[in-house]
Figure 1 (cartoon, rainbow, N blue to C red):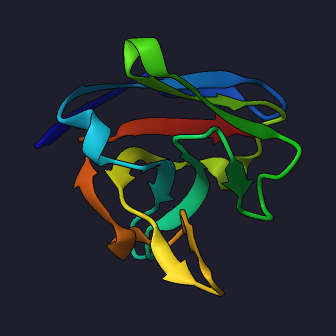
Figure 2 (cartoon, rainbow, N blue to C red):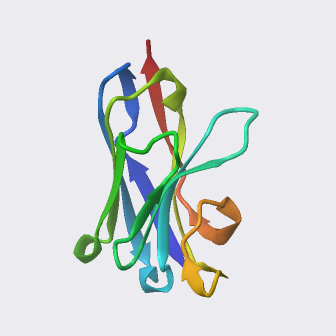
Length: 129
């Protein structure tokens, strides 16, 4: 079992920044992939950024160049630095942990929520124009 607790959400004006954190506890060594997802009411959960245990990260096109995912392995903490925030970034943000998928001859951390079996409770991010 892995427990995930997010923090750092809040309200900010367009162009501002926020840093989300996710504290992981339990059997964290079983989770090769960590990620940040977001969801707005009536829409599917979207993979924002994911990172593997080696530090290789990937981002959704909508946040590339603005968001940075990072992890502190010694502290079992995942971060999401969000800069140049836009109103369309408004959502509930979730931290997730899971395993990689095998395709194209290798194992990769993906942005699909079905690959993640542990989830935090979420933290709200609201960006006003």
